[in-house]
Image 1 (cartoon, rainbow, N blue to C red):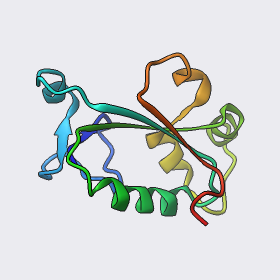
Image 2 (spheres, one colour; image 1 turned 135 degrees about the horizontal axis):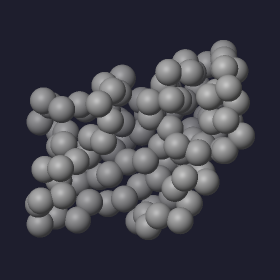
Image 3 (cartoon, rainbow, N blue to C red; image 1 turned 90 degrees about the vertical axis):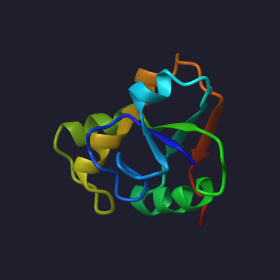
Image 4 (cartoon, rainbow, N blue to C red; image 1 turned 60 degrees about the vertical axis):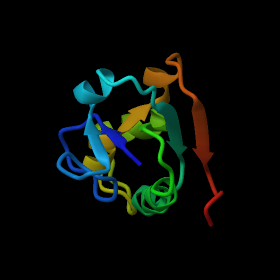
Length: 119
């Protein structure tokens, strides 16, 4: 599962640059492979645990995957304004999540919504 790495921040469960299952975004753009574009709209309280499960499941595919993590505009706005979740560190939201308004008009192959699907 080559995950395309778009952040300079190391994700706790997904591979990062230097790992054989990760590819840097500029290198991916120059390959003749089109990645599967997946938006993960994560509304679970414990976002990190949900990502751990998804990383495990996505690790079984041989496709190149470009993951985008998203959640509601209001949640991201609250975190950016200083609100602290009991379950997910604010830095994690800042580093890896986009508000829906920023990505809703981009082309994605798949939109995977997670509300209570993994319980």
